[in-house]
Length: 154
Image (cartoon, rainbow, N blue to C red; front, side, top):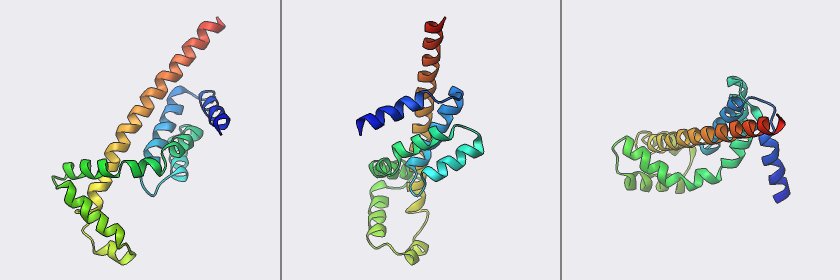
């Protein structure tokens, strides 16, 4: 398994595309991987739409899909509640009640402002932050790699 991961990382850094397109694809993948109910298909679709690297979008989505959404649920609720000036512990309690008694008809009865909107805004905020970080780190690594390769080939 570790050998597979190492090969994937090596493949990522040897993609034949511009650093900007690779980094943008990864950023899109990270953002959509974090967002609940989205994932690899959405990342590839947006990568095609924005004409960025599809493989890096897929890798970003797979690297963050599901597990990061679970880890960031509380920060998402806190951030979204702060944006909307709500008490995060009340939003969290309502969210737990909603999830424990989930059914599709209940989805239409809840207050979107009270439960869904704070969580959504929190995830978007965290997703944008992580996407910017992923883009910046990736572009710096790829540009550094290119400089090092040019230095050794000249």
